Length: 156
Image 1: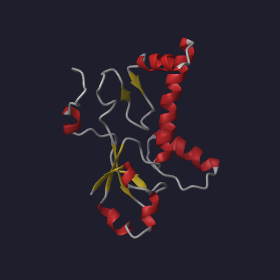
Image 2: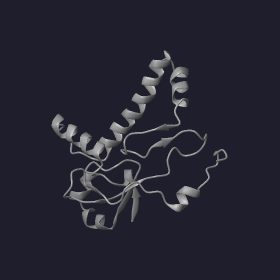
Image 3: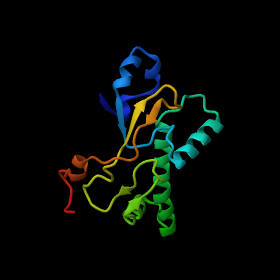
Image 4: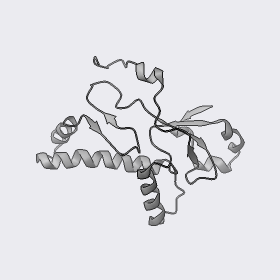
């Protein structure tokens, strides 16, 4: 079975679905909580040190990645001196790529209508790792994802 990140939550590892999870691969835009990616390890350490009572999940590095992306855009808007909506949009368009140090794949925003990335992480449920998903591959792009043309994609 293959599911995207919303198909899995660590709580499934202790419920009636647990036996079936050995057949599941999770495809996600963000790295699992327990990944060996250095930035993910930094985020996981910070989460543990903060003492949050909620069990960790892949949502932790994903949320940090989104904050990192917005931080880059807002810093550029500040440098430009315009934090209004049009100024933030202008700041976004001044980037060709946004990076989160592999929490998510680098986002290429140059081509209108094209996906910002076609890469994903693949993980498998594992009750032995924090967050319940073990990273099974580095960032991965299938040949089909590479060649797919979206309905609104501009020429390459």
